[in-house]
View 1 (cartoon, rainbow, N blue to C red):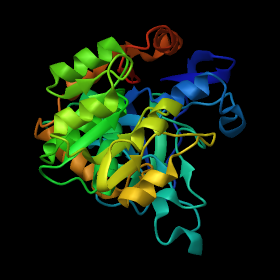
View 2: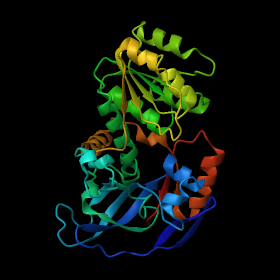
View 3: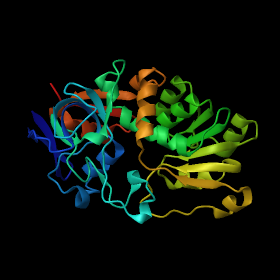
View 4: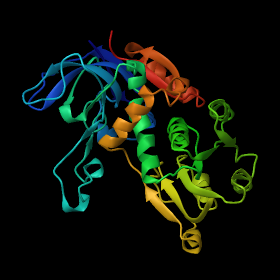
Amino acid sequence: MKAAIYQGNKTFTTGEGQAVEPGPGEVRLDVAFCGVCGTDVHIYHGAMDGRVGPPQVIGHEASARVAEIGDGVQDVSVGDRVAVRPLQFGEPTPFDKGCSHVGKNLKFIGIDTPGAMQGSWTVPAYTLHKLPEPVSLEHGAMIEPVAVACHDVRLGEVQEGENCVVIGGGPIGLLIGLVAREKGAKVMVSEVNATRLKLAESLGLQTVNPGNQDLTRAVAAFTGDAMADVVFEVSGSAAGVEAMTDLPNVRGRIVMVAIHPQPKPVNLFRFFWSEIRMIGARLYEPEDFEEAIAMVAADSLPVDALITQVNPIDQTQKVFQTIDSNPEGMKYLIQCGE
């Protein structure tokens, strides 16, 4: 079985992977597909070498079949088709307040520990969520990013009939828009990339290009001057942070989805003036995975439209080079199994 190994310096090699026998509470998987996340691209660019420690197998958006079960594992059987919630919980602390998915001692599987870009992968059994028959293994690799969107929309407390604006029309941004629409919200996506705007429009989402349109005026026209009940900042850009406080209405909510590693100026006066709330949203919890699976199984989300291409594992280097040269692409999947 093969493994894609990140070597550092924007380099992946394909080598022979090793099947690790599962210990107590663990399961060994035959990985089917692994999606490439924006975090994986940051790793490829060398931005996280101190944390990842190359050479290392990365990847966390995975679908798989259960191949082997360790002692004490219940509720899964060999042959089960699963998606993986790639979080390894550490020792809880009082700081965590029971939120293990963002606990101080959390390890992210596929970043802090070996990941899914390999044919065989051993993980804790509690990370597994079974896939019902309507969900293909290709679509199973989309469950993790859909779960991110479900978590973001849930923390944003999106209600039927509300107006939502998503700043950033990449894979997560579009999934947030689609999940919010499933909740009955009216959604506008703000994005500067013409190809991504066209995709959002083809999915039935209202769009605005802030590069050549006034975003605040566009949102006012879209909402009949009510402005946004919920704004999702998904762009990770300074322009997105600047714009996000202009869009909420009284007691509106801003959900911070993007990772902003450096501080950026925020218009705090807007928070005071309109009693706006800002909510951080990171990762996901088990209920978000279950909701994501239910939505994909019901064919409620057009996940197929977000898959740009699928490549075999020995083309992993080519996939990352393609992502660098094609910012218009959405979700790339690596086929890890036969």
